[in-house]
Image 1 (spheres, helix red, strand yellow):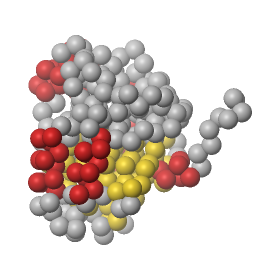
Image 2: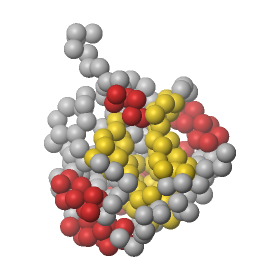
Image 3: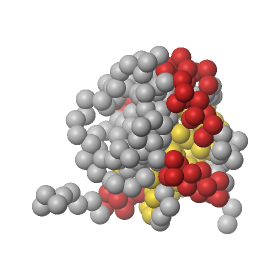
Image 4: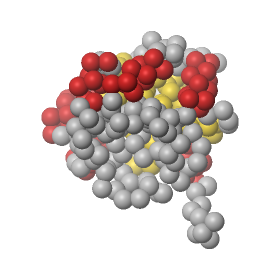
Length: 253
């Protein structure tokens, strides 16, 4: 079966002290077998925003056999003037258009700040550009920080500061899917026709509530979205199953 668009979302690689090379090697192998139309790396390539970490990240990402690599910065990447290094080593377009989908990227990281922000200008730009596309295309927005808090991730102080404005802009523009990373916790929220999918960490040992390295696979066919979570080296399943089967450790285990 030939899909119109297949995307892989990888997030929170965190090259540094908690980076798991064995897991990333599997991610590269599995992703190359999937042969996606685009790979979306939704931030935190590095742990500290240092030059040698970015240089390793560039070498690792070059191993993916995909023409469209959509690479976003995370709050960890913007530490220690990493925002200057990121922009030099990972130049990227803002809009990616496919037969059945369009992807717009938003920069939410700010220098030496853990919280994110979109800002009035980006929200205005988002609405202007998304309104150019008809309902025949699935509209996707990719960013690093999360818009709505998710279970097992503690405080929401490092959410996007202007999350309400950004949600309004996405709903007003009839966005179908928002892709986020940041908290290392796979999850899915549905707000009417809008899906907000969070990816876990692909290759870090820093887990929150979900103790497997994972990434997301998004399939678009005939205008319909399928969002799956893939355990690195393991099985895949619909991401919504994670929400439907959620059971917190209420017994303290």
